[in-house]
Amino acid sequence: MSEKIEVIGVRFKEVGKVYYFDPEGEHFSIGDRVIVETSRGTECGEVAADNRFVTEEKVVMPLKKVLRFATAEDLKHVEENNVLEKQAFDKCMVKIAEHGLDMKLVDVEYTFDNSKIIFYFTADGRVDFRELVKDLAAIFRTRIELRQIGVRDEAKMMGGLGICGRPFCCSQFLGEFAPVSVKMAKEQGLSLNPTKISGTCGRLMCCLKYEQDGYEELIRTMPRIGSAVRTPDGNGVVVDLNLMTGMLTVKMDDAPDGAPKIFNKAFVKRLRGEREEQRYEEETEE
Image (cartoon, rainbow, N blue to C red):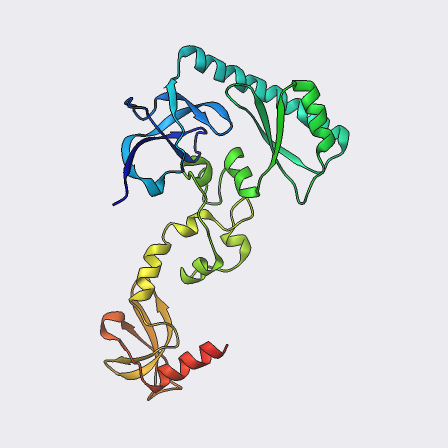
């Protein structure tokens, strides 16, 4: 068995990813503010998961340590950095305009120890910001990092209202983005019109993922469209189905020109004869 390691989960942004840290034998509660050692220096974060043991596979080694509980002075320093971030944002906007760069500044972040300032931006393509970095380094006299992000990350940082009228899921509770595909919309019987299944960010809506597991389970319990089936009224072919109600619309073999009939899936059995094999071969060839 894999060795288990004691960890706590720490989040650095309000709705950010949770990272594991070594509590060094100290007990922490959810909501505690802590100072931790990270790959980019000392940072102040909030405990999102209290002490627990996890398998070694879930931990990125070497596991960084919690240095201490955040003091009142530490929290005051965080507030001061927030003010500096707003000032840095305005100054960077001026420099972007001076250089005529085709980029959109989204956010600015100071590391806790002020050893680096990170400027997040979006752009349609690659941007030559070398001169911009030199100007910013001369102004702030510290390390400068410009990080290009995607439109989903921008939406998460900026926040806003979705087409449902509620705040963006990504800015409210999603720690990480899950892969979303058009196949999910198709399996859920939604319109494939991009404007109807895309969020404000222009990408497929994150909520398509929420009920996908349930839809996949329903799909496994029902014959697919085009399947040959046996019904109480005879054999036929499924021409439509409703996953939510479990009802199948079947075109009957003995009445090919007649109106299809509707049956509950509990009374329909899928046939695996010659017709099914022929349909499978045709799909494989395509």
